[in-house]
Amino acid sequence: MGEPTEQDCYIIEHALMVAYRLSSAPIAENGMDRDREIVDLTDDAVIAPILEAYRHWAAYALCDLEPPHRQYARYIGAVRAGRVEAVALVYAPPGFTSLLPSGSADGVRAILSGARGLPPNPLLIARRPDLPAVEARYHVDKKWTMLRMVVAAHGLKPAPTVASSVDVRPLAPADLPALQALYAVWPETVFTPFMFSCGVYYGAFVDGCLAAVAGTHALSARHGIAVIGNVFTRPEYRGRGLGTTVTGAVARALMERGARDVVLNVREDNAPASAAYSRLGFTVHEPFWEGNTTLRQEAT
Image 1 (cartoon, rainbow, N blue to C red):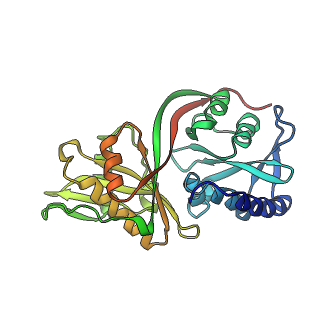
Image 2: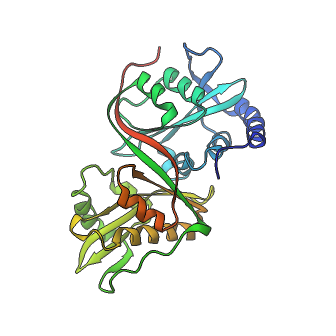
């Protein structure tokens, strides 16, 4: 599914105009754009349609409408003439905070310039057109370019065969120490035990050693979408197809749990990983960037 058609937008806008008036409450004035109101959106019926319009980009935000993630998710909307133009997700479970805007560039700019109570140091995940708005409100300490890749259930391909001595299986709570030890080799990873408790993780074991892993960032069976993450292979075991195999196993398990589409992120400069995901049927949806950021100042 790509960007919304004109007819899709008309239907979504009509539904949101009605639902917004019933469910949203102002939280900020936007001094730079008097035509838009920045509001907290608390009704999932208001939030979901605009996210569905940008489904593959907004996969995290759709999934975080589900428990147990919903309690940690705040959805800030930009509304113009009763129409929700954009939504920014602030997701803050224990040990981690991210900010992910979705929607029109003008709406995202209004949110970032006018919203109050934005997190001071989030991992900010943004599409390229939204980078100027991000940099106006946040100092970008470090950023890197990523690719959003997606596969539909009908497009998932079998993973390559690995050596018979490799044990590929779902990870259980007893595997958490081994999982944490593996991720300690990869300082850039964002992983918490909470993620493990909520998701599907598969590991590849070689002679009893956890050599490769793939996990789940989020799943929404209601919206039929899931996000794979924390894919990592120990350097000494690379080139054997282990990462591809565990990623394929997680994708298959998520589809069995109701996902019609599965997305994942990969660094733009990680050509081997991109090629491995392509062999499973994933295709590039769009490039974007992630960054460690610091809030410049609170909105007035």
